[in-house]
Amino acid sequence: MQRALRYVSVGTAVRGRRMAQRLRYGGRQPSVCDDVAEWAARHQQATAVPLLAPRPVTRRPPHTIEPSVLPEYTSRMTATQHGRYLVPVHDARIVGREGLVILPDNSYAAEYAYGPKRLRTLSDYRAPRRQRTVHKTGSYFPLLVMPFASPWNYYHWLHDTMMRYSGVADVLPDDTRIVVSPNLAPFQRETLRRVGIPDERLVTFDAREVWELETLYFTAPASNPHNSRSEPCAWLADTLRRAFGVTDTTPRRRLFLSRRDADLRRIVNEDAVEGLLRDHGFETIVPSELDLGEQVATFAAAEAVVAPHGAALTNILFAPSGTTVVEFIDPQFASNANTYWSLSEALDHEYWYFLAESVAAPRSQPDLHVPLDKLEATLARALRRPLAEPTAPS
Image (cartoon, rainbow, N blue to C red; front, top):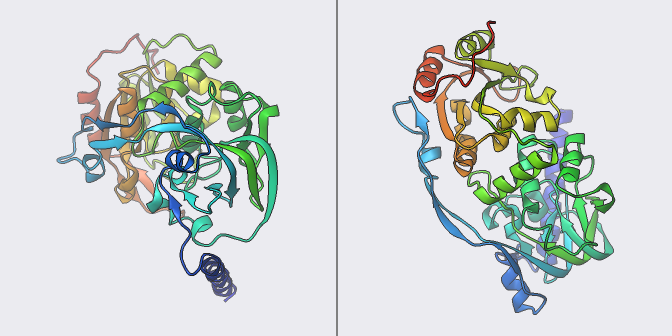
C-alpha cells in the first residue's frame, strides 16, 4: 500500500509540473531549437566556430557465426554524422538533473540531448521543476554527465561526456569554467585532469538551481552511442595514452574481460569459458580492479578482446587498430548490441558477436550462459593470426 501511495503521489507531482508548464507556455510544450549555431546567427549573438563537418558513413557488417545479422546492426550500416561547432550564447540557462540547455527565448537546445525526439522523453523537458535562478558571470562550458546515462558509468563518461571536449580546448577562452556533475568518481576526476582540465577550472552544477550564464559555450555531443565518430575517439585515445606515458602499442595480449565483480549480466559458466579461452592464449582481467592508467596500458597491448556486453569494452578505445573484438550478446537486450560494433568501426577494429543464452537472475537483468561451441567456432574464424608470443603454461 505504501508503495502504491508513493507512485500515486509521484505521478500527481509530475502531472502537476506538466500542467504548470502548459500554463507557463500558453498551453503548449516549450519550443525546441534544432540548431543553436543557426539560432545564434539569427539573433546576432555570435558566429559559430566549426569543429567537424557533417558526413555520411558506411560501416562494414559485423562478423558472426549466427545464421543472420541482427537488425540492430543492419539498420545502422549507413548513417549521417552531424557536424559540430562551438558557439557562445549569452544568458542561456542550464536546468534540471539532466543539465538541459535553454536558450534566452525559452527554447530547448535539442542537439544537447541527441535530437528533439529524445529530448521530449526527458523529465526536465516534459515536467520541469520550479527552481530558483542563479545568475553566473563569466564564461562556462558544460561537461555534465549526459542525459540517459547513469552518473558513474565508465562507457557513457568516456564516450558521451569526455568526447564533448574534443576539439574544444584550443578554442575556449582560457578563463572558461568547466561545469561538471556533482559527486564525480575518482576515475572521472582523473580523466578531466589527464585531458588538461585542472581541478581549479571545475565548477559543480547544482540541479536544485537554474543557472543563467553570462556566456555559455555550446557544442553538440561529439559521438552518438549508436553512431560513434572516429575523430573524437582518436582524440580521447591518443590524449590518454600520452597522458599516461603509454607509447608501446604492439598487439601481443589476448584479453578476456570478466564481470565477476558486477551485480548483473554475469557469466554463469565463466570457469568453462576461461578454460577454453586459456587454450587460445587468453588471460582473464577484471577491468574495474585496474585504475585508469592501468586500463589504458593494458588495452594498448591488446591483439584480441573477448567479453560480454558491458562498459569494460569501452577500453577497446586504447587498443591498436585492427584488434579483434568478440562480444557475447544477450538476446533480451539486443537493442544495444550495436554500441561496441559502432565503436569498433570508428577505431577500425575487427568486430565479432554471437548470441549467448539468458539465465534468469534475482536482479534487474539476467545473467548469461555462453555456448562453448559458439565461442569455439567464433575463435576458430576470428583468430586467424598465431599468438604474438608464447604463453606460459597454466
